[in-house]
Length: 176
Image 1 (tube, helix red, strand yellow):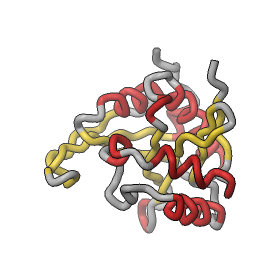
Image 2: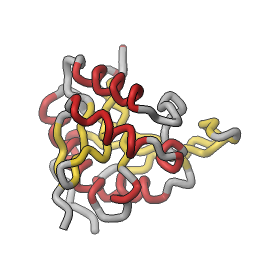
Image 3: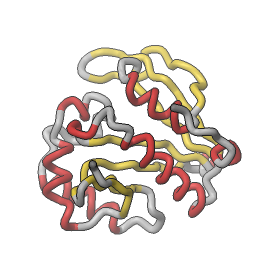
Image 4: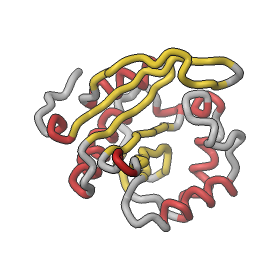
């Protein structure tokens, strides 16, 4: 049985971060700003960036004492400063085991408790049904579909837009 938790990132996580994130299947569902191929140097830059943040915005997903994923929040600015965009990934060997749904609920609860953010949103490419299901099980509501909103791998993709309000998060019944 796998043991998993969320925690802060550590310098000791460089090699496992590079090992698991250097996966085209993961990159295909992320923004192009994520490097691919993903090197240990990329991992070092990311972890150093995270360690220098004033607010905890990135949570390492640990399974069996190994860093295997990330949940990150990017705060809005100006009139959207009480919003945060959610992004996440999990190493392929741990897909479809319910880990991300549980870890996402913990990270969102922690983030809402320790920030003044009142709304979290996420964008998911149309063919990433698993990610949509994770969001729905965590309590997110689909607000709409932005047609041809993203350009990834040489083609335009529809993007499904989800949101979760802080006021609703504590009142949610977990979905199966």
